[in-house]
Image 1 (cartoon, one colour):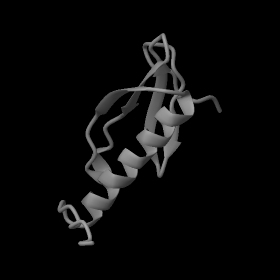
Image 2 (cartoon, helix red, strand yellow; image 1 turned 180 degrees about the horizontal axis):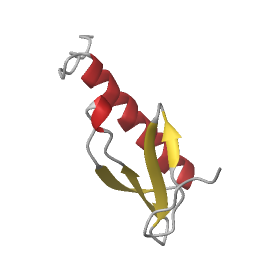
Image 3 (tube, one colour; image 1 turned 180 degrees about the vertical axis):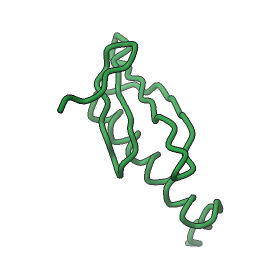
Amino acid sequence: MRAPRHEDGACSMLHRHVEFEVVEVPPDKWRWTIYAKKSVGLGRVTREVWGTRRDAITQCKREIDRKLERQSNGGTEKAAPTP
């Protein structure tokens, strides 16, 4: 089975059952998009970052993790630990 393709020709990837894609916006810039997943309370999010494709994928996965964690905590952010 092939990964779905979007209008810009990029292949979709999955992280924790959430679909996302990373597309190069030359030069040396990447755009990642998380696609809406209503079942886990995520909406579409797009960001552009400088660096490598790997950097963009890592940042996108962190955003998915953060949103899923917030959603599992009832929509509240955890307080940062005090030093």
